[in-house]
Image (cartoon, rainbow, N blue to C red):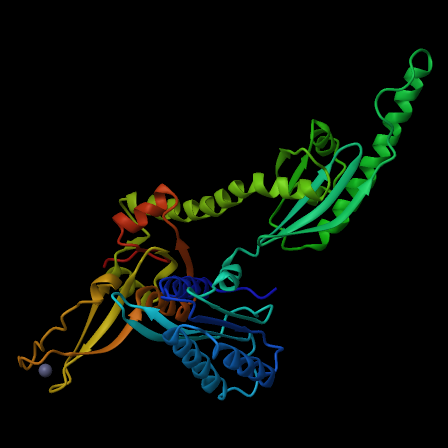
Length: 415
Ligand code: ZN
């Protein structure tokens, strides 16, 4: 399965944020998803049809805006003979910019993962669900539901639940006839139950062993049977080791799969946070060491350490919203770099040149997202990058106490 790098994930997140911030005054924002297998000529005829349909839109402004958005997509589409490897997405339309004003925006995105289906939508917002879906963790978990009557085996991929096997048993109910034959009946029942559990165990082990990347397994079912099933070792030992937790469910069929996923979702998010916490704890332990300290933090310090190849692991706060900008003087070519909050940059006064001391403001020559700058630096020297959310106390301290940028060093430095 193709996977996104941390940086691609982060970029996609930012793109979704930007798209979510666009609002149309009316239904005049177009989202168009073109999967890699789609013929461009087919997309063109589809758009031509939309174009003629849209002539009928009652409001004159909306009509004009929708038509120009479609035309803009069609003219951009001319540059493609076929969709790129993962397909192509257009987000085009007039977004509202306060009072009665609108502004045309056009995003053309080549996504990091393949687009599954063709989709055209005209609405008052951009449709980003498919992008969000790509962002969802594609980790695989196994789900096993078992009691004496039924067994369902499924997997959770990202946020999609797949039911793979459903079986029913012939184990008789617990209550037989009374008297002498009662004991015999019970014994037979237990034999049948044992055989049933063996069958369930073998089937589940076979299915789960095929998924090499499985992160863990959740077991569900009503009552204590699931616990008995686990303790008696009916599962292959490798599968047994992957059990994360058990849950009481009302059902042991497909509906039970959903019950387990609902109950487990908190645990899965906890696992992600626990991982982030582990990385942060390693860093915090280094920070408090007096000698041979392997911690580095702060924008300048980490940048320096990265440049000399001293960093082993880079820790970046997901919540960093800063640009690295470069100014340049038109008259003497003097350049200057500065880091500015994304919010501040909107109404930022460009500085005057310090060197030639003219009254002319310098030009904004380059603007890079700080996370991009650091990820690029890290990738060059083979440093592993961890994006850390603010969801744990440790993650929050990275953002608030260490300016969102920290690292664990390969060797101690004096910088
Ligand atoms: Zn100058």
